[in-house]
Image 1 (cartoon, rainbow, N blue to C red):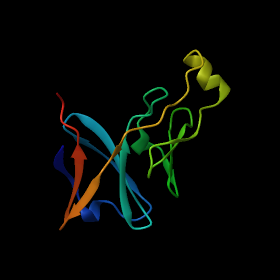
Image 2: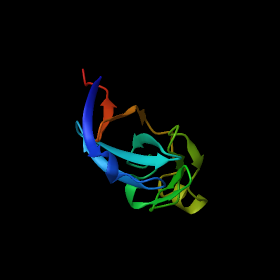
Image 3: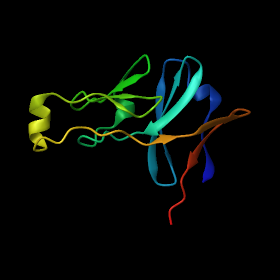
Image 4: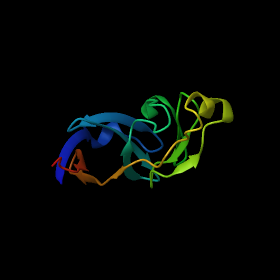
Length: 116
């Protein structure tokens, strides 16, 4: 695992989120209750860009079809509606990967798994 600097501490204020890229992965970083959390930034339903969505407390809402994910755990909170699922032959959203986040001085670092 490699710690990769992805942002500055002041880039992510409480109650907000940003999208970053590290080691070829798109990652969403959100500060909730003063704590940073990082999950995959691409919706598992149809690839919506989660940083372009809405953060409601600790839940990010995908801007495409409304899938919802807990930014602390990456777990699906709400599936897209029936019509959106029909677009993918019934496939819904699945849980997202979670990344360890470290604040190191003014830097925000994310732990990225190394590819084999």
